[in-house]
Image (cartoon, rainbow, N blue to C red):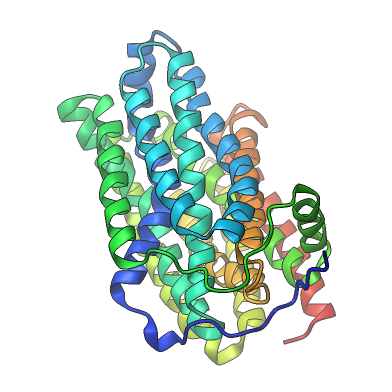
Length: 405
């Protein structure tokens, strides 16, 4: 079967977009990060309840990210064959089952199984949010839609620790899983009412060999490869910050869990501002130049974080450095995602799946490195941020040289 990987056919005109559609897409996209980051303030109490150490219970994050990454490789092709509606609704159902399982867990192995089930469901909703956006929009409209969706996706890890800290304080850590389960149920209803089936183009047969060949072709296609690799590296840096910040701020700067939640909530303001900046920059100066500006800002933030670690800087210096990184990340993530997916309308599910796989593998690697590369959490984070952002800048420079804006 011959597959054309560059498809610039138009989708539904941008004028058909509505606030409700964007809101539902945002809910789909945020499931994975919501389910992960809402637990951060609860990890110490979870460890006590499950009679394990705090580092041991953080395996629940790593397991989630790994299953999340691998599951997307299956969901994308399934959605290109059978449409978006059935996989999304099934994903919500599986996620809800996993949430109940986690909420009833009384030992770590049971919790990890539940987290794997959760991730299997969340990967369907997250990866297909991008494919559905590609079904509905094209060109600049797609970039704008993805910008708004990515802002919401970033808001989930920003506000969810504050929410999780409050739920943990008043009801215990199991309330976190009750909340995300109810959120999944409401989101499923909203999806069925507002969006439903959006895949109107040719259905791709579910042929494992052909799917594997498509993944290989996408991975070798510079139109996909370079922006996708760039976004994956930036996501690895972002998740390393999420995982290291509790250790740095609670253990190093004596933050309370509520104060930690406020820090993450404050990061949403930065991501929101940078997302709005991205939406304005792209039409004026082009995606390439806007992404390069974002990468330079993210790299500067990473270097500043490393400098804080080496100079034993105070909490203000650390937060300023992280804000600079978030400013750049908020520009690169939505624009790089739009650039990677825009040419592949016919294979939007497969392209979105492969991009999601790279993003979550980058996240898993970032979390692992930030926890293990050196004992100092701040130094480890600085090293990971510098490595990831500078490598992303180098990778994207290859695109700029080969395909000038």
